[in-house]
Amino acid sequence: MAAARRMLWMAPAGGFVAAGVWALRTWDPNLPGNPFLGCVFYAATGLHCPGCGATRALHALVHFDLAGALAMNALLILGGPLGLLLVLRALQQLPASFEPWLRPLARPWLWVGLVAGFGVLRNLPWAPFSWLAPG
Image (tube, rainbow, N blue to C red; front, side, top):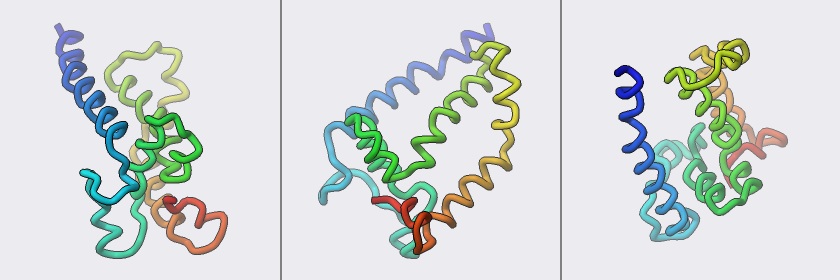
């Protein structure tokens, strides 16, 4: 019964992912007139938030452009697979052998520090930190 309840989220989540992939394959967020929202934080402050470039990174990823995706938002591209593993861990869908190396990655303060640090570093104006800015 509990396993069935855990699996109920999969159909809507799968539909959401499929719709997102379709939208990202259909419209280019780099072009004017696209239906995607811009970053409100960047518009208000002129600074790149940790999520800036995420839509463009996912657009590049669904077009199999890994280098372009990394250039837009490296944290999303490199941290995304780890986030997926952590979700599967929380849903108890991974073998027990994964637990020892996923336990340290499941600490919320690690991710808070990583995301905040990424947000600060990508706004520094000199290399190599300026390479973290989208684009």
